[in-house]
Length: 309
Image (cartoon, rainbow, N blue to C red; front, side):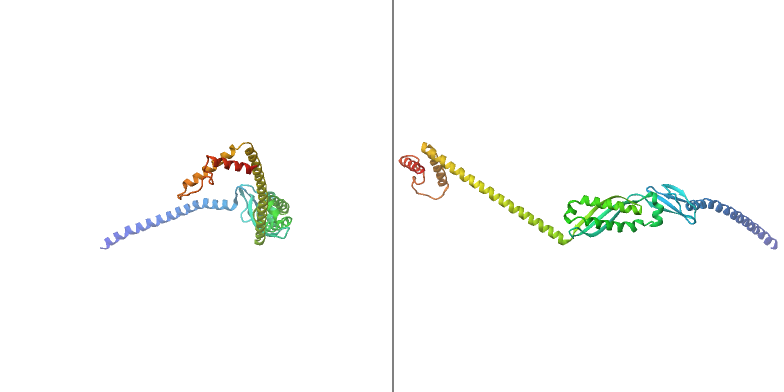
C-alpha cells in the first residue's frame, strides 16, 4: 500500500511543476505584448499634445509661456507647438452676423425701435493685438457699444418720415460710420442692414389719422370735381334739348310729316300699354291719340302745329 501511495504522488508533483513553467512563460509574453501595445498609444498621445488643426475660414495665434504671443499667424491646416509650454488660440475670420435692437429718438422727437444686422470679421493680420487687448470675445465687448452709439447719432439726423422714405440712405450712413469706428478695434464691417423699424403707438395712430384725413380730403375734392362735371353735363344736355326743340319747331313749320310720325309712335305705345292691361278701359280715341284717321286727326295735327308756332 505504501508503494501504491508513492506512485500516486509522483505524477501530481510533475504536473504542478509544468503548470508553473507555463505561467512564467505567459507572464513574460504578456509583458512583451503590453510593451508593444503601449508604443503606438504613447505616440498618439504625443501627437495630440503637439499638433493642432486650423479649419477652413479660421486662423490661429500661439501663446508661449516664456516669450508671450508669437508674431506668426497660423493658417489653415495642421501645425505644431510645444506641449505644456505653448497654447494655440483659434479665431474665426469668416463674416459673422451680429444683430442688435436699439430704441432711439428721431429729429422730430419720435421714439424709434430699430434693429440692425451687421456682418463683421476680425482683421486677420491683427489677431495678436485683438487677443492681447480684447480677448477671444472681442465682438461682445466692442460691437454693442459702438453700434448703439452710431445708430442713435445717425437716426437723430432724420425725422420720422425721412426714416421711412430714405431707409436705404439711413442704412448706408450707419454703415459708413460703423466702418470708421470699428477700424479702431481692428474689426472689419462688410455689410449692414436695417431689419426692423417701428415707431411708438401714438405716432402710428397719428399717421393713420393723417392718412384718413388725406383720403377724406381727396374724396371731397373728387366730389367737387364730379359736381362740376355733372353741372357741365346738365348745361350741355339743356342746350342740346333747346337746340333740338328749336330744330323741331322749324321742321314742323316747314312740314307736318314729322309730327304725324310722332303721333303714330305715341299711338303705338298707348295701344301696347292698353293691350297688356287686364282691365277694360272706355275712353275717347281722340284724347288717347288712337284716332289716326279722319278729321279729328287732322284737327289735332293743326292744333299742335299752331302751338309750335
